[in-house]
Image 1 (cartoon, protein in one colour):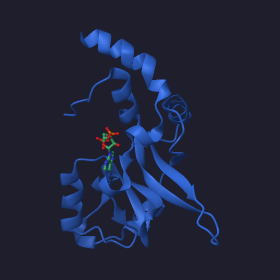
Image 2 (cartoon, rainbow, N blue to C red; image 1 turned 135 degrees about the vertical axis):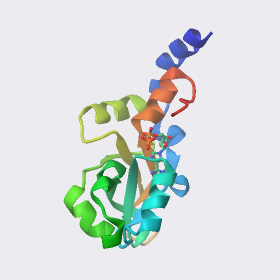
Image 3 (cartoon, protein in one colour; image 1 turned 60 degrees about the horizontal axis):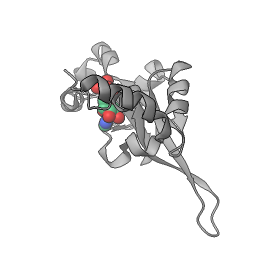
Image 4 (cartoon, rainbow, N blue to C red; image 1 turned 120 degrees about the vertical axis):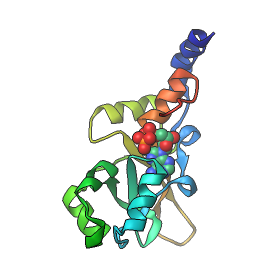
Length: 156
Ligand code: ADP
């Protein structure tokens, strides 16, 4: 039965779009570029259990970088280093995908490298205003693999 589910998932995942499987912005654990990496914040980051933490500036929908939790081994909480200076040193690029892009396309983006997380970004056109980007959420390789396997992956 498990195999049947996997076969069906493998066949159907390509028809789904990013928006259906992404983690919506309100559920994303992130930090501000102006935060200090204090003992409390580092503890909170470890407790979140995530390996990649989007970094925003001013608003939660303007994500400017990524904090890789494994890089935190270089941080001494006593120094209260700013996230800002930390991602300047260890900053990594982020993929950007559209909400209506297919999972097949998104998977191809991930295969091109630069890590396995993408920002899901849309354009809003409100009357009279310039079009602007909004971040709707994030998607990772794991979200796509879950679709292919047709089941949630129990992580650790
Ligand atoms: P991790 O390596 O951190 O466990 P995965 O890539 O395995 O992350 O993704 C597991 C799930 O967690 C996915 O649904 C993904 O969208 C979500 N996710 C990843 N990072 C974050 C984050 N910083 N905040 C909220 N959800 C996240």
